[in-house]
Image (tube, rainbow, N blue to C red; front, side, top):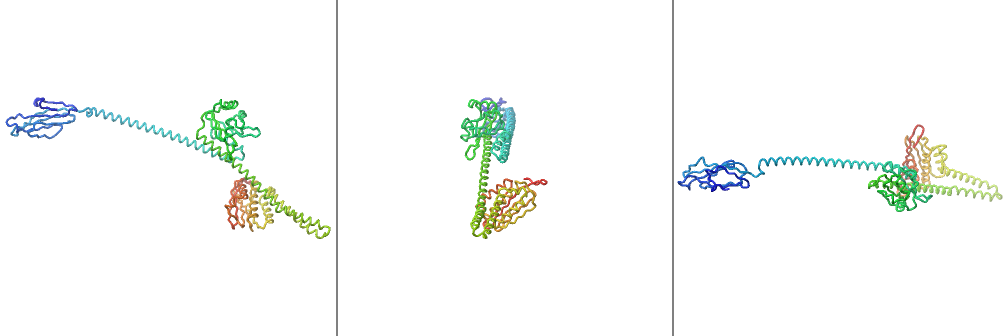
Length: 526
């Protein structure tokens, strides 16, 4: 903004500039005319600079982009002799700054920034609090899920324990419906089976259903959803029951029981559907992936238990057949041959009775001996089939008698050791007797042993059985799984005992069994 040419400097006392016009130029001259070309000039802008600008004979100056504020422009001049006018000229210069550098704007901006920071901090705090609440809800939800899974796993574990203790098919089915209602919180449960007598699918066991409503729950082969599940073997889930799609009497049952969702789980054993496990709820949409997986696991465990039960029955049948075959072989190989020999001796005696009466006695004596041996054989075998003497004499005495008879029939010496003997329940003594019988039978048939050791050690809480021989022995990987050993393992398992068999070719065989027993006063119980 030029000053000179507009207003004389001696009459100009103040100028005001406003951004963006915050620059000005000026030109001035000293009032000395002798030699004006030698006049000297200086100027300064107080509050902006502290030094004088000595510009010599130059008579103009310029300030640009002055910040807002109040300044004083001072102008000095000298004559040709270098004498300065000490008073000079002073002009007040006021520069109005842009609004954003004013105090009120900066104060307002500061207040605004403080407010923004406060609001941001409060928002951040609320965000953190909200996040914490969300995390707390997530933790609570996951804790609830974990507790739910824990309860489900515990329910499955308890169900496994109960199912494994079952010994009949009906007990397994009853455990299924009981566990589903009492532990897994279903409202109703029933197991359907095929009835050959009624030629229908009928309920066999249930929990939660009214007895009077079960009479209507019967279906022809392939009829309804139950029949469909029985036929296809595929799980069927109904999330929301539509009564109109059901048979009339079934509609009545569903309405009376208040069922709004249910599922049919087939129980499949060896590829055959043997039953349908039904789980019902009095609310719709009661099933999700977790509950379906849970009930499926329960059904699979029941199916496995039933399969094991059937396999055990088959094994018992095989054991019975093996025992019968062994007895038949023994009767054929020993008692029958001796009977035929006695019959031959009697025939010879009858043939020579008239011609050589004196020679008859020898044949009659031999026949008598053979018949006596047959009686002993039969007595021995009968004792094996059912050792009645156990009830009368107890295990130690009966075992001593059996081993005495066994030694007379075999070329093996047996040493029997019994320590701390005392009476045990009959079923335990029978199991022990059978185990030793089968072990000695294996010695007689396979080991070719010269000596066998049998020991019974009665401890305070267990009975230890040991049967060892010095025979041929065998490869454990090839013969330890035979019928004889399987039968012994089953007998030991039936009384909750353990068995260990040790053998190697040329090193004999050792059988060690341990049975738990508990003494209470004079009684001993398992």
